[in-house]
Image (cartoon, rainbow, N blue to C red; front, side):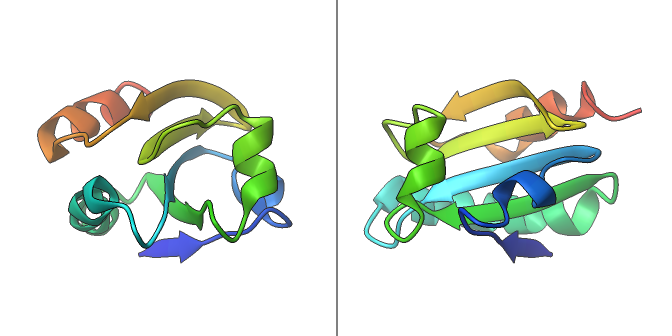
Length: 103
């Protein structure tokens, strides 16, 4: 399952464990391609928390993190940013990257 988060909940929701946040917007074509990949992985990877944030409705976090293009996938481990991917990322590549951060 992918949780929708907001500027107000971002820090709390991404402070523990391995968390992937998908920064996206409704009008973004590549975001629409990325979304099913994130959904699939959320069903398959129990040791990763999957979240998404609409950058149009939550501009503060994206601005603070310097996110200039979407989709941007931000990976945090125990509250620290460990990876950032911009543009569409295929499922196999994303799964391989996430595996590096899980025990």
